[in-house]
Picture 1 (spheres, rainbow, N blue to C red):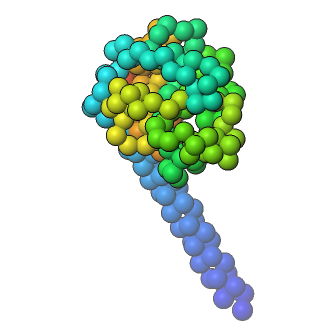
Picture 2 (cartoon, helix red, strand yellow):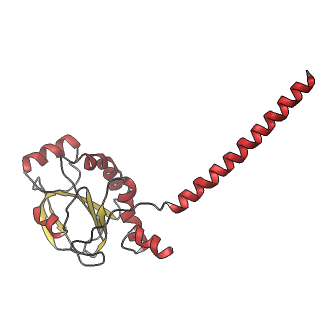
Picture 3 (cartoon, one colour):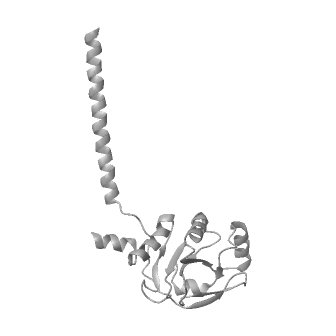
Length: 197
């Protein structure tokens, strides 16, 4: 009986040690995967004004007619232009993130929402989504000026009206990659990763 108990105890310790070795091997592989899989920044399109160029200049009245938004002119803050649509589900998913960015980064950043289409549809969208605090402009020319083909799309302008980052954004990480690109002084996070490699 004692011999059977001792054998089972030894076998149990061998199984525990094998499980620990397997756990460490998996942890190592996860670390390797994190190194290989780079963060995905905003997807830059090669159309429209390039990063580093001056932005096209627009003076637009908000949809409610309360204010004029100057885009592409020198300002005291950077500007994030967020192109959206009331029918875009991904755009709606990013609205809480934009609210968070607006409140946390408001000292250096203005967030401007922009779209095109019929004003009544957008007024209803503003009311339903609670976007009254954002400047919201309707301008087909603005989308054409930046060659926006897909939504949601974002353009980050610096204080001098230059484009510092832009791209198709589908998540918080991609939206924040625009700010990271500005901090690093590169066109995109992918460009920075390529430079490091």
